[in-house]
Amino acid sequence: MATISTQFVEELEHYGVDTTMDCFNCGTCAAICPLIYEHFPRRMIRYAQLGARERILEQANDLWHCLHCGLCTLTCPRQADPGELILGLRRLVVAEWRRADHV
Ligand code: SF4
Ligand code: SF4
Image (tube, helix red, strand yellow):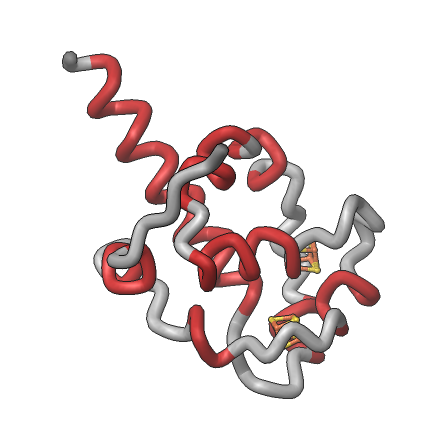
């Protein structure tokens, strides 16, 4: 069972993401994303909102599928900036990988 990080939204702010809770899960970003891949990026944003940090790290490779096309950010009705959220999650993953290398 995945554990939940209650501080995850605050942690993400250190990686340049301050719009995590602005998302209301309408799914527009997943519908417009050219990847057409398992509810991406909405799935990752939902994980972030829930503090499902482990789940994001387990599925980290998916973050590198993003093409930076910006369509999700352009069409998000809440200005939640999903494209930047994906970039922030990548920064978190890279930091985790670096930490793990130095253990
Ligand atoms: S990030 Fe925006 S477009 Fe995507 S589900 Fe959330 S509110 Fe909707
Ligand atoms: S920026 Fe990334 S997540 Fe957003 S629509 Fe483009 S490919 Fe999909």
